Length: 292
Image (cartoon, rainbow, N blue to C red; front, side):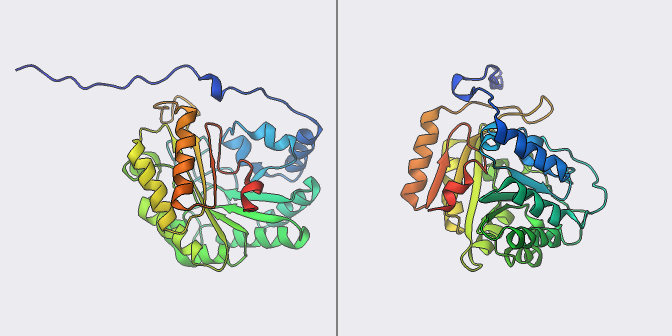
């Protein structure tokens, strides 16, 4: 009997032209970097090696990462350091507020590592940071990008009660790939978190998905539909690029037309704002999505 050999997909090795971009820095870039470092803050821009960090910093914007720089989960797509975090910085909320004021931001995105070592998942620091920023810089709009808090509604509610204008929690990938890509993450739990947020006053709810992790087109479309059904109205779709050889490899580079087609599909479903493109990340031009 003839043996059937398993076909192993060939991983792309060359970065396509549409993912290449020049790195440019100006005075605003330096001032933003200086303000963050002076206040002892981390940014997901650097920790996650975001390809847009130079563009955003040149415009004086940044995504601030709270609760340290060590994550308790080891997701296959993320370059942020993992391990056992040390302690909790109770002065961090005020330092974030001072940095936001120094940078003269009009819109700030606050995110964090996952802190499963804390009983409240870090939600108290989350709430205090949001409130401190809003008090010190009343004109700023605050967007948050949070972990799932293990699906504990009490902790999520603590963050939502601080009233950020946008609540973001990324689904990251399709249901079939959740277990292998997201350490500790669950598709249903994340959908619950997003639905709870959508039911909490008038907060705008946002989520994002990456292409290039081994998903199929029909799975991506189903995920987008599921997000909408769970109250998400702002959506980002971007290209996954493996940060190191130790992470999940990039399975493929999606063509630019695929991002356009998915954006059209999301709008047809009813999303209010969609950012879909090879270089799009969760916080890319976040201030523009708020205005819809």
